[in-house]
Length: 327
Image (tube, rainbow, N blue to C red; front, side, top):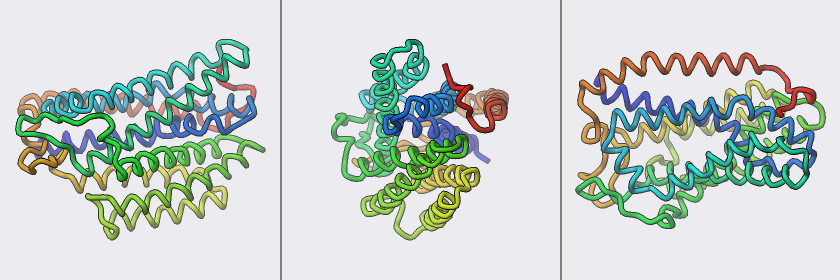
């Protein structure tokens, strides 16, 4: 197998891991303000606290892999979408600060402000990532020099906004299902209702996106598979099978990312100016020697990262008790 293809697959795997894992925490954060009782908020925070920083390593690894393996694509994407990535970075920073600072003062105003910061930053991250995915689907104005000239507002089109909102509501659902599995009593009932609501909204947005989607048609193997999984997820949530529900939800997220990767391959980003200017896994890659050396490093680092993730989730498995709330 070509080294270019191996690295393309590895980047897709890393970004999928980030979406599935940190999507839970971002989804919990996105709907955080809709929970009124402080004890409920404390329980939700306990679900985010042990994992958010570890989960971000998957995103950093994906960005690092893109930088090392496909520097031309990295340079074009990150310089052309500079303001969008700065907005994303601000959201990521404030999410972490809010989680860590929220309980440092036993003061209503202090906690309320950090609650707003947590929810707002989580929504911003999910929305910007969704809009970015939408733009990768429809293409960007890449010129013959590999430069992208586009302003921030131009990134928000009807299609990319739908994908952005779909990202927010999908991961809000993803997080609600996970929390329903981890919680008990009245909070679990509330979370089940939230999961149903977010699932209904997400299905509507999922189908609406195909009216504008330039990559994936209405009838495709991925689309059919995701539709069947949504039906199965609907049944599982109604029957309160949340453990299986989070597995199915994760599969939907993974399939969505893989479907986009398969449909744009061998491109990273398709140029809307000329297809000849598109960034591909061949014209944007490092040398074979660099790819080979980096693959050895990844062969050591990725298993360590995966092992750490499994270890942490095993340590914090089970229901979240009120007395174990995150401080």
